[in-house]
Length: 369
Image (cartoon, rainbow, N blue to C red; front, side):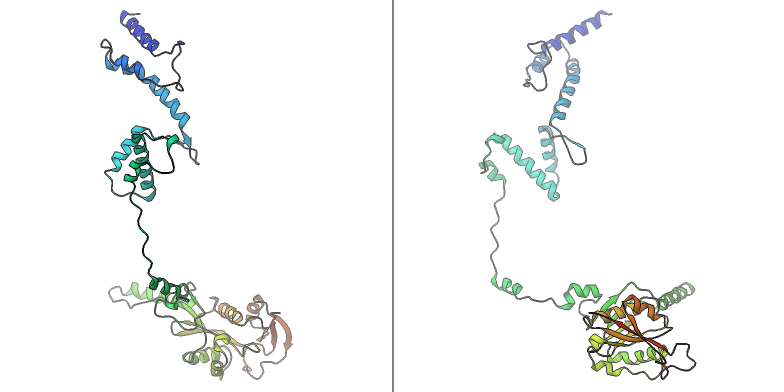
């Protein structure tokens, strides 16, 4: 071994002995910390600074890791959280002074760090902190804002509100009615259903757009299917639907006189009537007609109309007649209608002799009690 290596080991051993306690063992991290050995080494003119720090650095890093492990905690995800040192706090506060925007949580953390820093400067520790803050903290905290004066007129106006206008209500948003355009007696609005006719019109528009890209395209607005009671302007279209679905000569104008808000449901797409459901009277509920315009079937329109018609007349039995070979029998069965009687020749006076519909009928009843 060379003389240089031997002298280096002696120097390291000498420094290590100077950092040992009275019992000859290295000082534990749990014992009191003193800077005197470090100052003694730094004041040694014979040893370069790099050699001194290089010999002390491994032990310093080991002791710091032990202390951080003792003081650290784990968050719910299992990650190790190391407490901020005084140097970390000062660096964070210096960086925070150059930043203007903070979130609520960041501003709260910054405020706590500032308070902790001022407590250390004032000599306040956890043991002598009382419920009243020290004078220096009173200077840091902003003065509490005085409560706003009460305006009796505003409070009285708010307390006088009992109902919300329909155009401003949540119900209007559910129904799809924009503010100021409330539909009277609206039962329901369906924005999702796409019927065969609607799909056909969409295909025609797309074909026209692709075939004539140079032409100005006509405006198109999507409308929902609305469900509402019968109105007078519906009658012509309703009679046309019933004439095509059943037989000619049907007139339901008198339904406007017998609680139409409870006994009629009209499905409309814009100004086009696409479905009709009519009940005779709320006193003796009897469904006389239920029909959907051709091209608008298989879209749950009849189901929706029947549902709302039943819902508008609770606590009462509802009866109807249906042709023996009519597929609507399945719809009525899903709602709980049960056959009570088989009537032979019920539709003899109404149906055309060449009609494929059966002249016989089932009498169905929906029992409510």
